[in-house]
Image 1 (cartoon, rainbow, N blue to C red):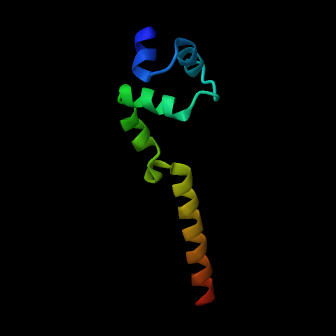
Image 2: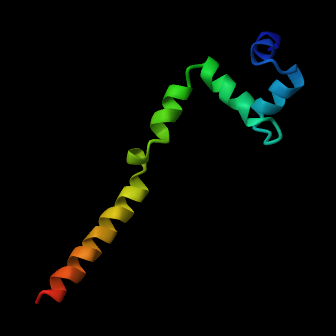
Image 3: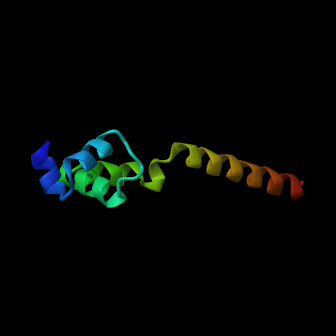
Length: 75
């Protein structure tokens, strides 16, 4: 625990609060921990817009509606 706190340049109590998900811990501490564990690579792909299936479904639905309204306008 002390070694991780040292690597993150935080106190052990701060590290414990971070492990519990305390929002008062600076975002930089979370990001540094992710970087030290190479989790930043997984976060990069998880936050990629093309991986947001809900947004993709909304875009497909909107495109279908636009196509349907254009098709009915040309009848």
